[in-house]
Amino acid sequence: MYKIGIPSRLSSSPADKRVVIANQLIDLIADRLRSLDAEPILLNPSDLSHPPDLDALLLPGGGDISPHRYGQEPDPRVYNVDPEQDRLDFGMARHALHRNLPIMGICRGMQLLNVLYGGSLIQHLPTSAVKHSFQLKRKSTTLAERFTPHEVEITPGSRLAGILGSSVWTASAHHQAVDELGEGLRIVARAADGTVEAVEDPRRSVIGVQWHPEIREHGGEAQDHLFMNLLHCVELGRAVKI
Image 1: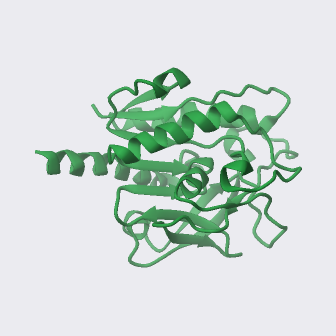
Image 2: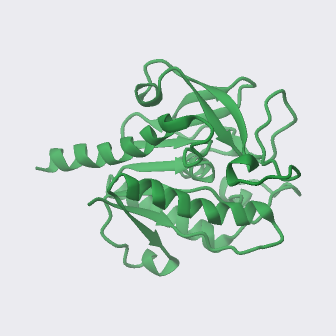
């Protein structure tokens, strides 16, 4: 059974629904991995000094990355910046890259990969024809109803296109996005308004998506292919070592 590391969410803020939802999503991600016979391993700050033996790393969604990480002062609309969370997530991502482990980033996780590769972020997206943010004011009975569905166009010939095809409907919940692209990354999907929706490193098994594939109500079972791809990359890596 493959061991997939997931940095724990360290914040708890009942007053901010976005933080509550991000914490709930960890359970959904873990369930998706278990359904594919993988073992999710929740990582904590204490693991930074002695990381456990992992087969891959999954960077989940969460609060905003400190803009100081990419050389900017914070916009007033930045939320839930947690230096300890940044330290954990960046530390585990560096460890995974050093060990050449497959990495999958979701939402904040994709943004973190871009910053780690030397890129920057749009701290707050301008209003556009495509809605990307949480549906916080809507009376919702399910977690999925908090997310905004929209279509994403995928770059032909990319690794992501091989996983999902030419386009996919997604569950969106973000107010930031990739700005300057990190060195070595490639943009492989965009929304209709031009917002970057996915990046990948063509030299490594590293892929990040801005949406939430753990929310299957938007995009259907096709979203599971992203998790399956992560495990497939583990299999390929082990085959090479053998």
